[in-house]
Figure 1 (cartoon, protein in one colour):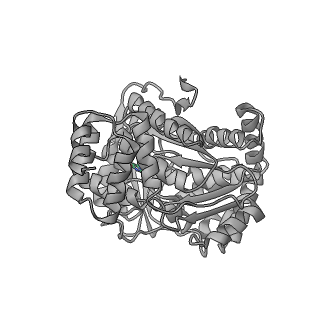
Figure 2 (spheres, helix red, strand yellow):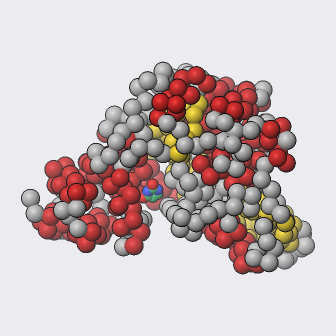
Figure 3 (tube, rainbow, N blue to C red):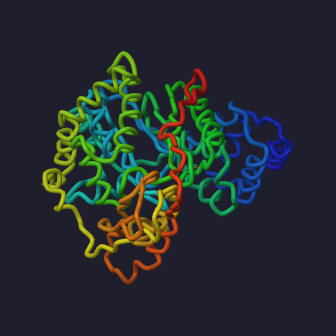
Length: 441
Ligand code: URA
């Protein structure tokens, strides 16, 4: 089998066999297929696309490049959740304890933030003493004992994805649906859950800026999951503006606790209920999605979700004092207030710009090795649709050095659009994609 012929066949729009795809990926991992041939291959995929079968075969070739997590020692049906990335997305911090309190085993491996999007592991590290690096056995024992464990990725999961992603990043091939779908799903399949709920973001702060492209990505991922025997469903949710009111690690933990106290911003609460009810239903803990939602509302309002969060923190060595006194969390030295330049309505808050501004303040990483400051970030005082008067506070920057914050300040101000008329409302949840089809709301 010549690699040249495989590239040629894909370039000419032919369907590749599983054997051809495996040959490319295993050769890439062993070093017999060089970067330049894989670069040509992924560019051919970018232009020609892949069939559902080819996308599944590529996903499984990536899974086979590394280890798989065996979660069979955990009792019950394991449901994983994955978001395609957003700004201010702290849902895992709320959802994990919430669904665990409903009886769903939560064995969650999370990542760190990169670029304009944050990561759950960084957020959890703003809790004093909290350990996110757990041996596999401890991780599993935790889930069996208290129903939840959240740790960083251990083991060598989907190493081909790391190599492919690095190559895509420098060859303008990141935004290809089969390549994104296989990248995400290979990691989810290797992580071992029985069922997968995908939160596919759409809007300015998302990979998929438009609804049709988000639906296409969701369909590709649901097809892969279904094809390899994992029950998979996707919700398409809005990322036109940041989720909730805070962006930045300790600030987001604070907001998650407020949500678990039964308060917090409406969009965050609603998204957690929508995603959580799918998880509880898929885990078999409720007869219908509506019943699951009722159960989760009760758990949020009666504090059992917050109790589960406290149990998680203590179990992973963290100091739980912040749950009763949020001022214990890391706090930035200074606050910079941004005032509305004119009267009107907030008609847009560009999520990507807010994410980049937070990164520039030190909340996120420009490169994989950047150091982050857990205390800094952005608090949005007004969200889309709100009425503002000139001089009213739009946002508060939590900064370590007010002088260094100038660049971010301008960026945040520019991220806001103010218009005379109220904007057309956007949906928080646009629809869902399951093996049965697409349902837009
Ligand atoms: N997230 C991933 O894990 N992979 C992609 O290709 C894009 C987003």
